[in-house]
Image 1 (cartoon, rainbow, N blue to C red):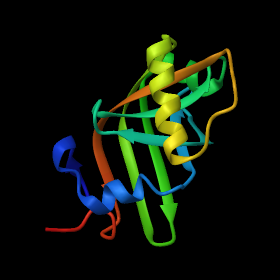
Image 2: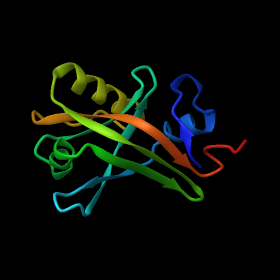
Image 3: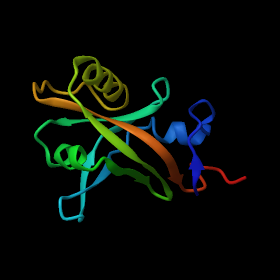
Image 4: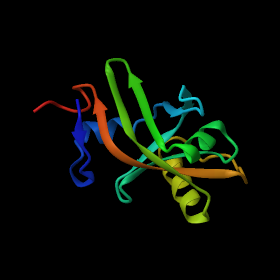
Length: 137
């Protein structure tokens, strides 16, 4: 189901699902347009109206997003699923990396040190999801 993003009115089941510890799949576009899908941790940040992923600055996903920011981030748990559709900026400034790491630590664990870490700041254009996550009506 397609829902416009109103950060101040996200459905509680959606927020809960994106708070529970689930690994996600980040899909980006390779240079030839083929999908590139990898496992990541992703977190919502309603205060900054975005989602975050942390990664190494030299990763293929970061290279893909520097070239073409379009992406999808999906997670599934049994019959429950949700996908974020949007675009990402690859940020290396200390404040963005620190914010992304702080949010990541709240959902998963404290990330290990990585001097090459970047933050993928995702501007969410829409959420998709099962009826358990995005109630109909």
